[in-house]
Image (cartoon, rainbow, N blue to C red; front, side, top):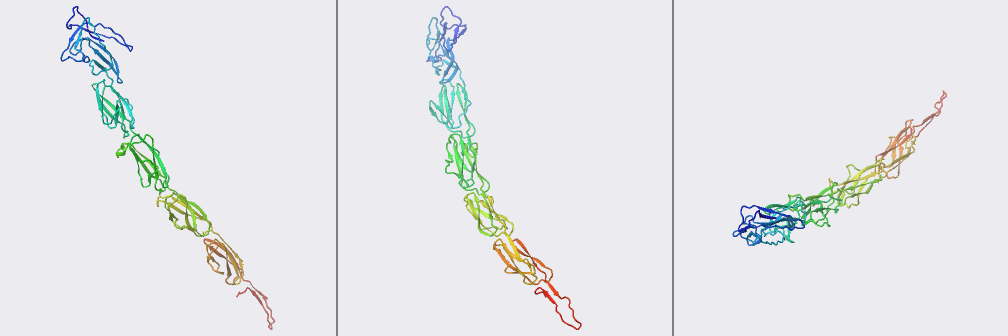
Length: 549
């Protein structure tokens, strides 16, 4: 573009700039391939400048102190330092020297210009449009060492600076500008920011720099993503002491972390656990291994917690954004009983097994009135394998089987698990026979009674009043045939039979034997006697049972 071209000339060469003239502008356009433009420069005696407008360099020759000086402008787009500047104008004033603005007729002005960029010291260069600093929306990673590039669009040569926060550093010509330092440069530059530490919170953090670029304050905000803490699965431990389980957590890489147990009474870290704290978490998941250092004394599960903290939650008890709890449950302990069938006879030193969670003390009991007596009522610690309870049973006094239970409790006296040992005792038996069943009407007519009862049963025998026993009674059954005699107490004075039961009771079992004594017999022969009137004699035969009066 040729600017300030006088609209008229005069025949006689002027020595000063003509007055009352209009000035025009002539332009041409060059495409990407370039163009050659020819102009005729009419004379324009714009004049010389002196102090205070005199300059000492062509770079400062910008027309100060003159009016309507003819000039050539090259306007276009310049890309420098990665920044695209628009409406960049290079203005040149022909003249014999740096302070001369005269265009003399029939003179030849040669200006060799090599465009190598926007020289901040060249005042002939103006920049019309400078793009703003644009920070894309993508956040920096939450972890330590994440990077983000931002193009600073300052005009070449223009100084600018900003102070780095404590969590952010940057690279300047390959050299790190550490966190907290000042980043200074001049002109356009692509700044590579790098996080000096992981974000200590579960919320984004950002810093806003205010840069005076091209005479305008511009905000530049750099945001680091929120950190995360993810817990693994909850843990379930067996009821026995020493059982182990593991979980894990994943924290943003570079965060300080810690893990603590909420219940140290029964829960502890296992030998294989790698640690409980660290200054910088790795990128991958970390395993936490715990163990039960005591058996669960209760039948119900008990629960502890692994509290995992990261970042700001480690040192700030009020901040819980990076705090997670991994539940650790120890299942309830158990007792498994058994059942046993025993014979009807009394036995001491019987055993029945039970199995309980290992490591617990135990007690055994029977309900009041039970026919079982315990030889031992406590013990421990349990082994996790079958163990025996020792107990005694008396003879079953009944003709039916019977059942009772032994309750075994392990661990806590009120909440510990219980198991039942069931003892089933067979029925006792009693058989009785008597011979003969019918006795003579005389006194001391006798017979024998044979009975057989389960060994150990106390027995007693009762008889009708007209019978008595011979032999010692009562006693105890011996499991074999036992015999007693019985006899009539006197003569049956009745002509009718006497009948009754001999009752044998062994334990709660009762048997009866029916016995009969015949009625007495009595006869008289010659029930009529006849005598002469003069007298005579005769006999009568009386026959009856022995002893009958």
